[in-house]
Length: 132
Image (tube, rainbow, N blue to C red; front, top):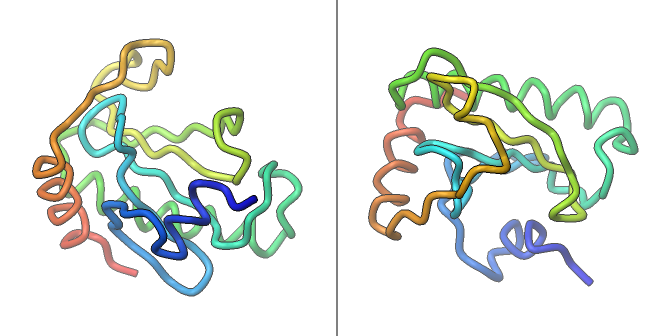
């Protein structure tokens, strides 16, 4: 059975996509820790990040770097934090989280529930800043 991320990649379910190429896709987390929280996902469905082929893992980092720079330019923050947890969806993904405090990347705190319009506005601002 396809992961929810594969369904996003295949356009079977909607997402607020901020960047995409032939191997990776980046989209807003619909229940973010903070505004601008993005997930970066390889299009190849592999559960565990360290099971990715070396070239796909390296490319994921490079693609994530470009997306993170776009987030930093679009969302007021001191840095963009990176987290790989991988327990909630069996498809490798990187969390890029705008940070102003250490608590901004605390996955135990309650998630935000932004309106669809707010997500689309945030996605548009980030898309305009990403240079692939």
